Image (tube, rainbow, N blue to C red; front, side):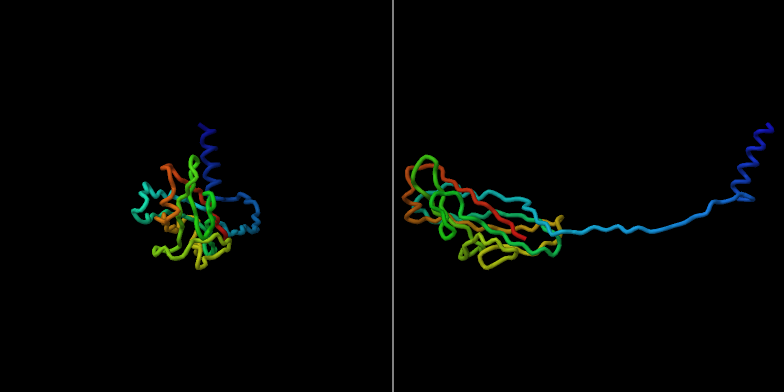
Length: 175
């Protein structure tokens, strides 16, 4: 019982701070820093599927999307190459078949009117023939529409015999 009374007294003495020495305290500061660098990511590209083409039935228009994310205030530009179709150029893209010689003519445009061909310029901003913009933060996706047209041209109409035609486009994001 006596031991318990001593403990209670010691706790009370500590709680009141009576007669106890408290250690000295010193403080200092340290810096915390980080540098944010410009960064852009291609978040998504969707397939452009023209579907079934009937020669002589007219052009087929489709769209696809390129979604990017960039750090805030980072200017960027998106270029599209000519594609892998045999004989493709920026001015006239082509899809080719692995089994036949024929080619389908198509192109990719920056506008819904399909009057400005999408170029492959690797510049960190939009131009008349590319798309781009300014980043709003990597958490924010910015979508860019690619306007495509399969052209019902003499070349496309001559793409026989029937087959599947493909091309692969390389997207270049410059910032």
